[in-house]
Image (cartoon, rainbow, N blue to C red; front, top):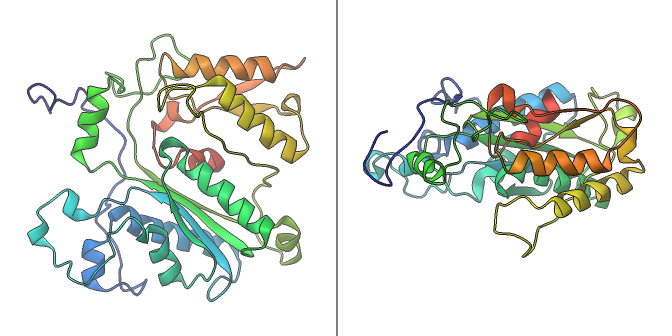
Length: 302
C-alpha cells in the first residue's frame, strides 16, 4: 500500500496461511453466529489443539487438561464492517475467549489462559503450562499459538517503525539483514509429566528439562534487546534443568534479521556457551519469517 505520509506499507511480500476462512463449526459444536464473529485465529487454534490432543493419544475430554494459548484475537469486526455480522449475545470474539473457547468445545477442565507477550507469547504459555504441571494444577496441557496478519494497521505500524525487510525476507546473522518478514502460522503441542506419559504409553516427541522467564525492567526502552536479561533467563532455565550451557550442541535463537537484535543475542550466546566442540546456532525465521505469537512453537516443531 503506497499511501501518503504515515499510511504507507513499504513491503509487498509475506508468508500467509491458505484458506483461513474455512472452518467446520459443526464438527466442534460452534454455533453459526459464534463462528461468524469468532476471531479467525481462535478457529485455527481450536483445529490445531484438537489435532495435537488426538495425536498425543491422551484421554482429554472431561479431564483436568489445561489450555494455554497465544493468538491474534482481533475478531472479524476489526477488519470489516460491523454491520455485516450479528454479534448480539456472542462473546466469541473477545480476547479473553481465545483459550476458553478451546477448553469449552474440547471439554478441557484444567486452567484456561490466553497470553500476549508479543514475540515471547508461546514460550510464556509453555512456561506457565510447565509450572501448572509441577504445581499439580492439571495433569496435562495443550500449548498453542496462532498468528494471522489480516489487520492492516499492523502492517502500517511495522513499516513506520522501519522494522520490515525491504525484500520481504528474514536474513538472520547476515550482513545484509535489514529487518524481518511478517508470516502466519498456527502450532500446538501437548505436554504431560514424563513419568505419567511413560506409564500411559503416550506418544513422546521430546522432553522439557527446564523453563524460565523474566523482564528487562527499566534497563532499556520496551522491545529493545537487553543481553543481561536474556542471559539471566537462560541461566535460570539451565539451573532448573540441572544442565550447563556447555552441554548443548545446538542453540535456536530468536534472531529475526535485525541489525541490532541479532548481534546482541549471538554475542551473549557465544560468551556463555563456550566449549571445545563446535556449537551450532540457527533461527527458523530465515525459513518462514517472523510469526509474532508463535515463534517458540515453530521452533519446537522443526
